[in-house]
Image 1 (tube, rainbow over the protein chains, first blue to last red):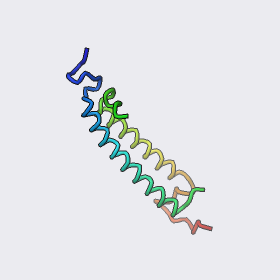
Image 2: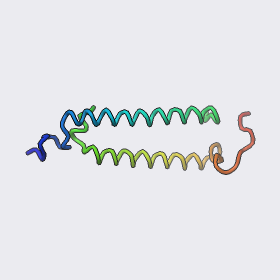
Image 3: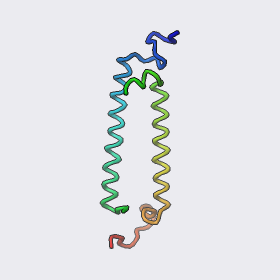
Image 4: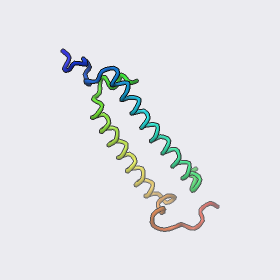
Length: 49
Length: 51
């Protein structure tokens, strides 16, 4: 018994899920890139090995 | 992979992921602050350590 028109548990349609995923992954890649830069800078400052 | 958003509510998942990531970042910064090597980036410069 679908709780909503989209018929999915989350309520998102396939198109909405794909669009959200694209934006979610962009944000995640941004976070990873930022963290990578931070770790490179810290390594240049004080290597941990 | 996008099909995960057909299962999990996007808003709740987003809040959950952000809260988890924030707590991990907070924890890691405080762990680093408690180490001798990196524990002084706020309070005092240690003598030149690159020897």
